[in-house]
Image (cartoon, rainbow, N blue to C red):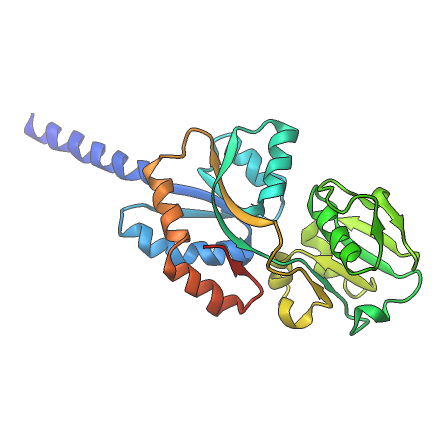
Length: 257
C-alpha cells in the first residue's frame, strides 16, 4: 500500500510539473531568439518553455485559439486586432515587447531617389502589413494613398503613383528571395534579419521608433492571470531582455519597456 501511495505521489508531482510547461508559437528571427534568452530564467521556476517555430502568419493565432499553444509571439498589435475581428478569435495581448521598423531594400539601387520609372516593388500581402508598407512609401513621397491611416489599405487605395510603379503582393516570408528580381522590396524586419539584412545599414527607407506597430505576446482571453504566463511576461520585459535587444539588434529592433 505504501509503495502504491508513493507511486501515485510521483505521478501527481510529474503531472504538476507538466502543467507548468508553456508552448509558444514564434517566428524564428527575432522572436525565437529572444525567447531562447529567457528559457533558463523560466526553468528556475520549473517552467519548461517549448518554442514552436513558424513562418506562416496564418498559423499562430489559429493554433492559440484552438488551444494547441499557450501563447504566440510573432505579430504586431494592429495585425492581432485585424485577426480577432476577422476570425473572432478569443485572444488578446499580455505585453508589448518591441517595434520592428519596416524597411525598403534593394539590390539594384543605393538610394530611394534612384527608383526608376515603371519600377517593380514587392511587398507583403497580409492585412495591416501591406498598409504599413504602402504607408512607408506614402510618407516618403513615393506614392499617395487616399487615407494613410487606413490599416487595411491595399494597392487599390493608391491615388497617385507618379513613377507608375508595379506592386507585387506576396507572403512576407518570400520577400527577401525577390530582391534579385525586383527593383525594391518592402520587408518586415523579422524576415529581413532572417535573410541577413541589416535594417539600420541596408534599408533605403526605414520606419522610425514612433511606429504604432508594437510586437506583442498574445494569449487566450481568460488566461491573463495564469502564473506561467505572468512569469513569461515578467521575463520578456526584464532589464536582461532590454539589454539583449539593444546589444543584439543594434537599433534594428526597439524595446518598448
